[in-house]
Length: 336
Ligand code: AFP
Image 1 (cartoon, rainbow, N blue to C red):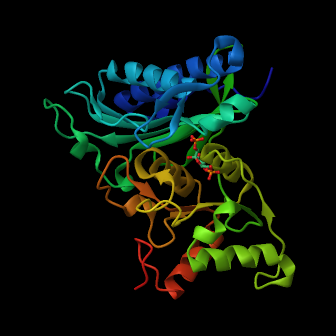
Image 2: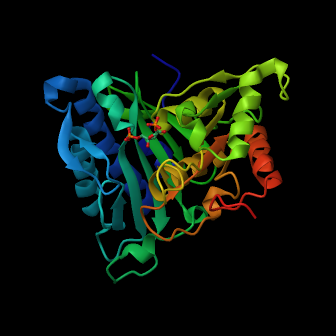
């Protein structure tokens, strides 16, 4: 017998509208199927490449495709869902014209981790839909992150968990395999404002802007440098796992602007990764920017838009932003 007793269903009954509760329950049900497939691993024939590229030009894993199909089919059958957008699909999928919600998702973030038995997860964002009676189109999705009514992620790690925000803090749930239900383990997740741990793919150093190089040099110098204290690096190469670590024990995560691929301002997607994670991080007391402006204030111009991401402990995020301000960096990476 453990101390936890509130299920996700009970939590949603208390805190969410019927429509939101229904959409989140649909997402949770699909996540349980994905979690079971991951548990079976190679035995379920899910390892390896699917042989296609997604809209981002990335090789799709078999489970990317299976997870995408599971979520898409479940959500388009939900009566409250007016439209769905997936990181894996070129175009949005209209659903039920009378629905009041739009859902975006990254079906399997960090999917290159599947074959090496490391953490992956499903990230989702829920936006309001206002054109009832009409078929949803891409323009309906192009809303700033501040409009999100809920966001979160299902993480498939040593255990399966859900981090959820409805805009009033962040709640953490753990999946109980015996009851097949998500159970609340923390109803007020908070992030420390300061940290000595950071996450970045340092192999991209030569492509970063000077303020990011200067910032990381300061951290690497530790107590012999400008920061006067030692820092520790952690990089899982799955945003979901790096963000989860920050929610649990603090830190700062960066996938900054880089010049590696011409025309791509960073690697992460605004609508499937950056916005939902920013909502979760801010609701836990952290901060999230593209190093110049708050991510959730960005009005998307395209559903597959990419943005630089700097999120986590408030003091570090503000420190990095101040370095960019001092260097006169603009949102597109140019200098003022
Ligand atoms: P995949 O889903 O293709 O594995 O990409 C994951 C991701 O978009 C994000 O979750 C990580 O933070 C980032 O890529 C890792 O990128 P690097 O390959 O540069 O380490």
